[in-house]
Image 1 (spheres, rainbow, N blue to C red):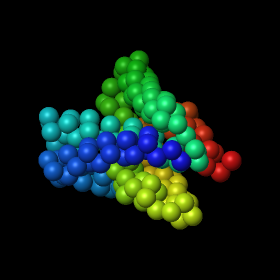
Image 2 (image 1 turned 120 degrees about the horizontal axis):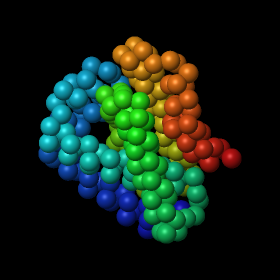
Image 3 (image 1 turned 60 degrees about the vertical axis):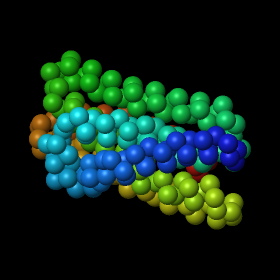
Amino acid sequence: MNGDGFFILLTISFFLIGILRAYYWSYASLLVLGSIQYRYASQYLRLENALTQRVSMITFLIMIINISLFINLQQSVISVNSFFEILLYIFLYFSSKFLVIRFLGNIFLKKELAKLTVFFSFISDRSFAIIIFPFLVFVYFVPYDLDIYFVYMLILLSIIFMSLKIYSIYKIGTNSFGLIPLYIFLYLCILEIFPFVLVAKGFFY
């Protein structure tokens, strides 16, 4: 693996996580817990203010960087340009997903549902990105014959967080808004599961 691009992004991610730890740790920890238990997510939503908006922005950047690093683990050798190309693709994917959800919410007059869908979709990805940071550091510094175990652990964590995301979105859609399960299934397949399968396929094939 080319260490230059990986190290640059890893350093930026470390700097952003350091900002969270120094100034916004209570909000960041609440965000991570919210991806696991609904009551923490509700508490975070009730605290919505300028500080939570900053946390959302910082964690969005961490999400883009760390998930890009995670995807780059598929390659044994990769150039700096390819690193930042994948970074751009990840940014476009999450930005497009945000715009599509908000657009559908406006079209079908479900703005509150769109807001919650964005929140619960991104909260899992943000939490996953924060939690995998130590594993990414280990992958970079440990010998090559050991890093494969950390990669497998990252894949397992990604499956767990994807399952939590699917459960949260399905539960909110059916219980809180009474949506037809077919609509939720189509959304999950197109915007959540299909991209995840594409990424997972790169690790095994």
